[in-house]
Length: 165
Image 1 (spheres, rainbow, N blue to C red):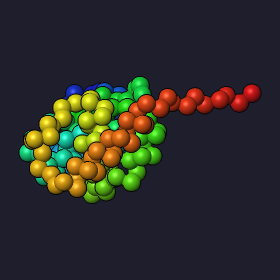
Image 2: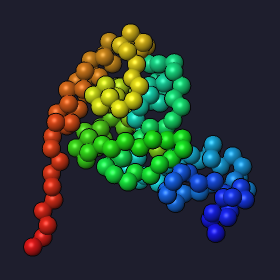
Image 3: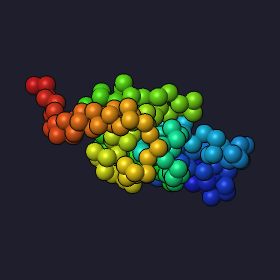
Image 4: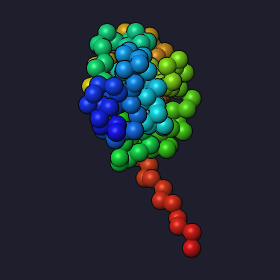
């Protein structure tokens, strides 16, 4: 039934097997207006990372093409057309809780210093060079401190849960 509705352009899927659809028949702008909420529905642990927070803070002028989010799922994160989910461990989430900014569109995001430190440590996408940034000296110090903490988190081996016997 959903396939027929999508073929008839009544609904549009967020992507792959997300189970999230936009009702474009009733709300033609639903995808544009509620995309971030839909990503959060498909990936409940989603936190915006990447260059989006940097641009919104005024640190860079490049416009992101895709929404990048962190996900607890190491495998099986859903494929989405305009978003990309990358794995981050639980220890990363614990460290980054202090560096989250609320988002009015339903998706929390990293602060600019945390997003830059994450990008420079994990190197899973384009990152600006130091000379391309419009930032203050205290921001640079915070980024360096966060990078040290993130390197420690990245070196940790994941804990395996014991099975109850």
